[in-house]
Image (spheres, rainbow, N blue to C red):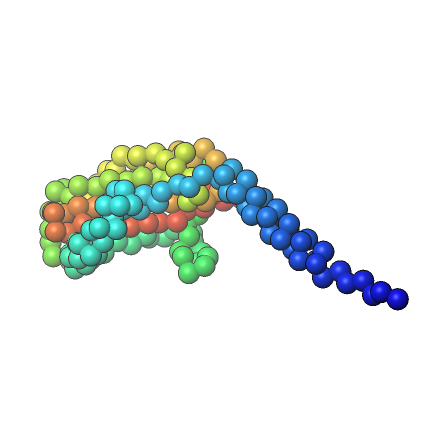
Length: 170
């Protein structure tokens, strides 16, 4: 009697399974576009080529100022401090501790309300300075996770970048 072996069929089936898995991966990945992270308010290429300068600017900024959130309901999720906000109109306040008595009115502040997973809902925010607090008024149209991105410029050698994670109450 001749004993049949099926290992050649197994090799062919495994190669076919690999090809099908590759095609499936490509189809699924093409449905989800890549969104650039805009944390530094600049393109990825500029951030990559100037990263050391950005870090030095952040260090100089941190020597002059500290940012705090006061009396906000929050929780820690994956080592990130997340603040609760309401769906609809919100006011968010960030206290600036001025370590070297710099004139806060001379700060240039850019703020962006964004979703972590898409740039589709990005909204530039107007910032009001109330004593030592930055005040942001914004309208959240959808439930879920949001982030408030800040770029605060003191001068060309002192620029601070901050990200605050926000979540709508369920």
